[in-house]
Amino acid sequence: MNSVTAYEIIALQALAEAGPSDWDALVTEVYINRRCVSFQNHLELAQALQPSQFKAPFQLVTRATHAALFLRDEWCAATGEIIWGFTFRYFCNDNFTIDYRYDRPDWVSPLAEGETIQGDLSGY
Image (cartoon, rainbow, N blue to C red; front, side):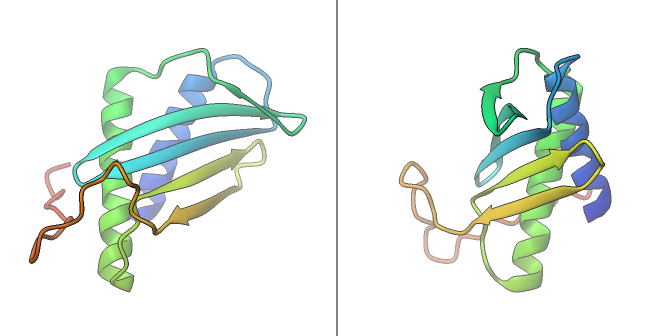
């Protein structure tokens, strides 16, 4: 996997959850806790957010989970910084923005001494 493919997979997951709805942007909030990922998808229309009404197929959500972990691990390897999530905003013209979250959320226990969050995703 590479970064471009990872972003494409996350966009496909957001598109699947948007269904046939109208939108100006698809907003995916990604929350990462070590090896677990949670997605919250919203449709942005006229600067108002509304939750998506559809669910992406399980296999696509699984691929998006691995893509988010891949992006987190790549970012950590490149910068030495841990990201605990990000907001992915996909627009109708195929552009997107990403805002990374660097602060560990309260619901995530601190890393133990010597613990690393990066894992081997080579099989995905």
